[in-house]
Image (tube, rainbow over all chains, first blue to last red; front, top):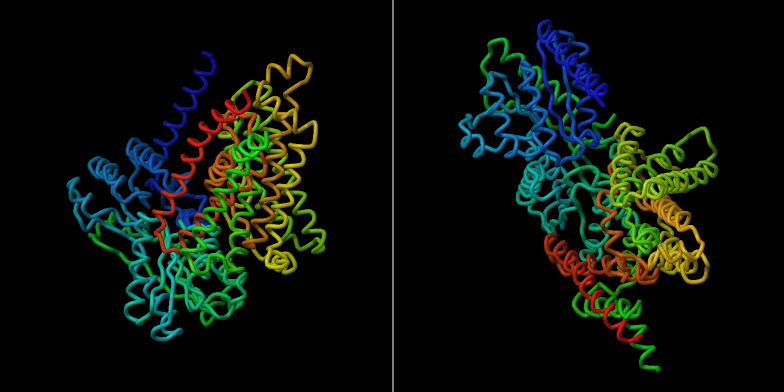
Length: 311
Length: 324
């Protein structure tokens, strides 16, 4: 038992010394990600690693979580980075309110924090004494879903009946995407039959869509808040023998949906360039470290992907 | 005697069947499309995966155990089967057959592990399967590098859409498994041993049988049904993903419990489990068709689970009164 303890202590000590040595050479960037189980964040992490390797001027320490809602892991990661005195923390918060106290701690410790992917809550920022226009690097989810919703609306024409499949109730990007879809519905004069959540999941989206098809057999279009759900919706339409009669749009531009778009089973999706997102946030961070002053929202591009622009 | 027999039946599966029938009648009156052929066919498809997992879960719960790893195991099975089925070097028929085998063997291997650890070190299955939940999920993520696998053979995908007389092929498979499970429980020595061990493990041991083998076998059966469920999932949605199956263990346990199987083991039936899964499916479908919100549906499902357990305590009392 004693021996084991000694070994653990030695390892911990070595790790502390190691990271201290690194800090002396290159600036260290802590990257706090959401669930790496999600393909979207996995590609984002790979993009950041690739950027770090190509750039070579800084040390990157990426930390992921086990699930989308595992905010404890993120808070511990923030605390570890503060203790390690990294130069820059790049954070995709799992909870836009829950992570604010950790951000405050880091800022107080003199560490630059760049918020990306999901915005920190304005009220929570103000309450903890941080500026409301805290630097955020990321896409406009509402703009993206509005664009793809409008793309669907233009294709279907006025008064066409549509359904919205929402993401997790309570999740900020789910709310923003829903808002964008609603805006498109209003602007194109579409007839919104129902708006239900499928918790971002394929199987649940399939179930919800089959049931909604029974209730509203004359639906013409479906807007899905992510591509995983679009997969389930497309399959439900196929199973009901209505392929080609109902247009589906999604969000995220995952590989499986690109196939469906090429086959004409899906109309369009939104690309928010996930692989570059974390790298972009790191770049913005270094611009500030080099003396530039940037605040507020640094928007990253969103683009509608359809058959026309899919390679 | 006759009334006693009827009362006895009503207190078992028949009672749960009545609740299901009542729900169906209620929805048929209040929802225009509920009783239509396509909607019934949809419900069949929607309950198939949960039913299959619940069949395996029934064996485990009858022994007083629980398996929290089925959702993650499902993901792992789809990933390994997904790799096999998309292997371009194999002829299509072989790839599909092999994928089914891989899926079932993966499930059984996980089940063997669960059962063996529980029995070897006398640890409650709650803890062991909680560990397995993480192991299987981690393995699924690692093998797939958190990517979704798609582009299955067209033959496989179109098979998933077939139905005979409006009964989807996926549901036919699920029902077949329920019947096999029912047969094993009711007609075989193995089944009787399951009930006997669930009721009084010590008595079984003292009578010279080794409960260990049966308990490990129950976990392996549960794993095998997860393997089958994985294939059904792939047939239904044409994809394999390391993050699917979250919370499936809870739906399966809910189906078993609503179906009248006691969490302390020894009492319950496969037909009850089928009815339990159907009640959850019908409730979800019917409430959505009526236009109730997502949150209301979630509350209703939760309430039904609790109501089922409360009813179970009364049922146990009444059964005791009847038999005395």
